[in-house]
Length: 404
Length: 173
Image 1 (cartoon, rainbow over the protein chains, first blue to last red):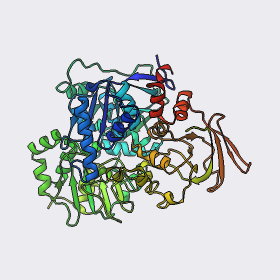
Image 2: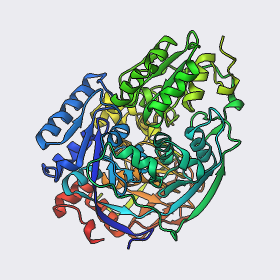
Image 3: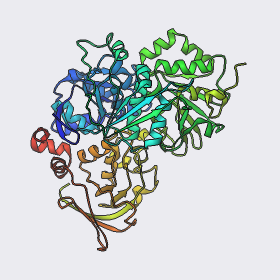
Image 4: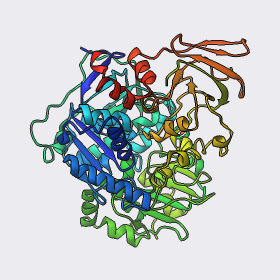
């Protein structure tokens, strides 16, 4: 049995790369001596980062990815399918106990479904594509127990921002983070994905929520074959266990330019904003769109503020449409773009200008992240983002005036 | 990396230097030429870094160097500029793996941050696991790399390692 600190070579169950990382995987395979992929069934490629392409260079790279997928017989999810981290769970690729690697740092998201999943770089991914294996250092585990009932307008995003603010950006470096406790048990799969998605923002190798009946209810219509959840051993060793009481938690916000620069929203209320982004692998799911639509129902996005909404996947988009959420958001003044990563990484669909301020439901507020080194990004929940869009300034959703 | 001793001039950086600061994500979708891309290296911290740095220079940083994205372009632009090694109190894990995989020496050394001045000359001996100030005033111990990772670095990265050994060697670790 492997113990934390051991270095092991392991066979990977699923490997994923996207348009931001696949080009260097293809290049590395070529340089390694024109290596072929070992098992195309275990690989998924997704075009989500700049989708549709916004430049000739990007289009050329995407063309290379499509040709590679065709040549090697790999399943590719092209423009409009959605964000890799939403698609893989939706399409039934993620199973509890699977070992999944993705050439993207937010691959840690799938731990919400009980998989062990982590991000790697392109050359590592080339090794996985060609050999089916990779080396891993078995991580220590941090246990974060979240207890209590959340107030209205307080969500998984507020919890995870609060945790990152306390443990800091390197608080879990190289470690696995297990989210447990009564609050997590009551959370939807979607909210658990938000928690695990942000684990990398405290340096973690992966986030993990023990599978339960909610997990199985999500997976059963999606996954072929048996589902074999793994649970923590009763005597599992933790490097540290911490409990976070969330009954009194207020909406949280990560201020520029670090994800661990977290404050209660009320402390920064009133800062004027130019753009709101609702979407990303952190908060672009149906319940996130629902939260924003609920806030915006009967209200409008303030004049001179742009609110960009990007559903995380085609499934999310269609479901939101069927529920009338898209219509409501558009009528409230939002711009709704096709599924994908949207403006999160600063390449298209809402690049910021110098001195502009954006409140975003995504995961990183680093300098230059949304395409401009002189812009400022605040990270918050969909409720807070939508409330801020209405007021034109950073606003705790509890502070919104009653609807006219 | 063919030699295990690296000598170079120090550039000092702080804590939590992230990959968006090293190379903003937007460029990887508009620039594929590594020489052009490297002109933007560390742009989020110091716009002129690429013009000031010379071959074999050494970056000395605080904790959590390379946090953020999995983009391999981050260590690649540093290597393209000729950076000889990055020394930091700690590294983010994906950056750590990426740097080794592309053959950029990285050195974990808890006590060095704040102790060396920008512009001073350092000598790193990867085999011996030591770092010393060339004026002889200070010496530090690094956290040694596991031997199979040191081998990947010595081979010049994972691509060269694969070519040399016909595939991965980590089944033997």
